[in-house]
Amino acid sequence: MLFAIMLLSVYLMPLGYSAALSLRDSSVEPGQPLWPSEAAQFSYEGQSYDLYNVPIAGTLRQLALYKPGRESSVFIDPKDPTQQIQWQGRWRTLDKVWNFAPRWSNFAEAWRITNFGRLFFNTVAIAVIGTIGAVGSAVIIAYGFSRFRIPGKTILFTILVGTIILPQQVTIVPTYAMFATIGWEGTWLPLLVPHFFGNAYNIFLLRQFFMSIPRDLDEAAMIDGAGPFHILWSVIVPQAWPAIIAVSLFHFFFAWNDFLAPLVYLVGHEDLWPISVGMSYFAGQYNTQPQLIQATAIMALALPVVIFMFAQKVFVQGVVVTGVEK
Image (cartoon, rainbow, N blue to C red; front, side, top):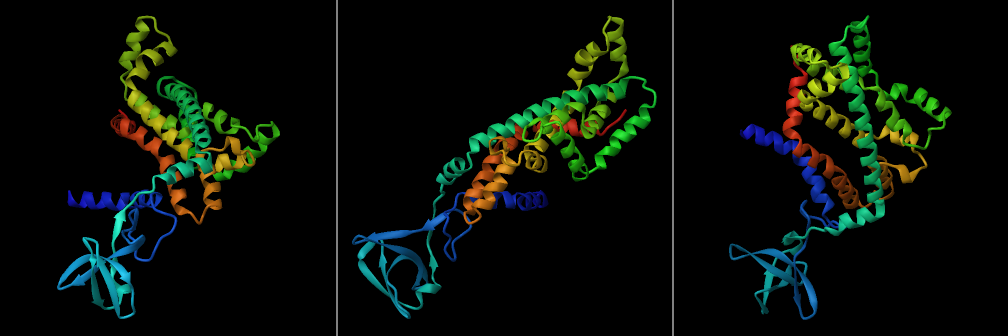
């Protein structure tokens, strides 16, 4: 249990640091903690003085630095401002007192600067439409591979699965030339249309699940007069929801995080950019303000995390079952 907690802490540490940085101020002082903070101050006679942890008589007291000196400084006790304390030592060696002060305005500023609402709409539209096309086509193709006798089916399926190892970077140049020739450059069509023709990874997972469904159910439906598409819709799909949801989440997260394809096809069309491209441009322009960059990243991460949390049980079930073939 302890090892699991330690492993989880290490895994979530970058996310925690990103969340903390998104709530910090733009200026960071030496010795300032990682969590969102600001120097604790005490107001006296119209002036603000920083608080320090001062060791006095073996105890640490939070005192305001009133008159700093090289070897001797004067501090004020916030509880009794009339009491001035002469402290011997170098005040720069003291630890400053910090208060927890999250800057929630970073999110509003990042939303405004990046036009995040438009980026969010574009990303959701691309991810949802692409997921519908990818899952719908994968269900039909996987149904064919798992239920019908097709000449050369094994060879075709082997070739299909083999395309999984083909990197996107290898085909990006010829596909870009083809889409540019037919005038699809600068539109969402190259990002959406190819998904309606199936994806090898999705097809493989769904085929594995469909093959675990007994054929007796198909035969019973045929006796009742059901055709192939009726069997798919009434028999296969209702039992395959865990696998379908898993594949849907896989593709949705892929489309949400895809950077290369939108960057290539939507260059120069800022109104069509998804979050991935918009954040890259924003990070280059505002590299001196990491708190705004991290605030944008947290906003971009919010929807996928919420979706995964609500669909976690079905997602895990679909991933486990799709790897089992009966």
